Amino acid sequence: MQLDGKIAIVTGGASGFGEGMVRRFVAEGAKVVIADINGEAAGPLARELGGAATAVRADVSRDADVAALAEAAMAVGGRIDILVNNAGVGHLPQPLDKLSEAEFDRLFAVNMKSVYLTARHVVPAMKAAGGGAILNIASTGGVAPRPNLAWYNASKGWMITATRAMAIELARHKVRVNAINPVAGDTPLLPTFMGTDTPESRVRIVSTIPLGRLSTPADIAAAAVFLCSDEASLITGVAMEVDGGRCL
Image (cartoon, rainbow, N blue to C red; front, side, top):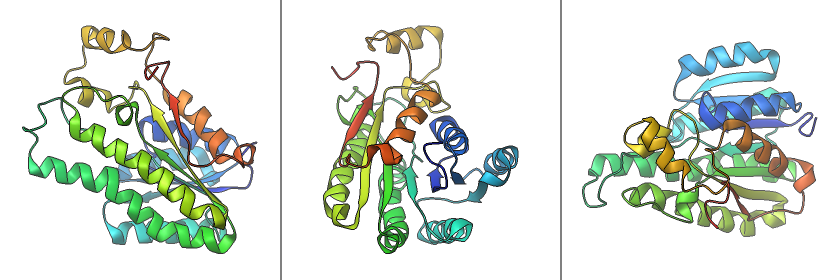
């Protein structure tokens, strides 16, 4: 029960790494607001988890949606202890000069602007409460980029720098800000990075991971619980690789 009594928001919480964190946070005693643009997935997950979970349909790239999300979380327990910025999108592998402007704008809005918007609406509540924990889900791509994913890699590098900048500014308010850099995971986003999900493409990616497997939602959730718990009370500004050695 490392998160007993905590109020948490997990964006992109209805699938993949987000769903893994939602389930583990609830198991650790938290009340979780599942924020996802896919309300048809968030609703059933919240109902399955019972009174410990609340579903909110939100497009995290829209200010009005994020404002409503923060209000919904405050209504759960009068404060917000944990914010996980997990929602993200990728793009198909392609030369960096071929990505369309529309795709780039979507990448910017979901992977970067959303972190600004959640900070804008959640950080004031954390300051008022005297502390909190923010966790940004970045990527090994922000540390050791793969070819043909330039703008996705860049968005995650931005998130790592944002994590450190937020951490140093918010430390005096007792708000800790950390990140996790997952290696490619067995989630719905995986085919986006590979271009095509085949046994051969999976073997190719796994061959770059020294421990010999993809990450799982359970791997990321375990690290997230620690970084968001009081056990990590002296840890801030860290971007933790959960990558099976990929960045070594």
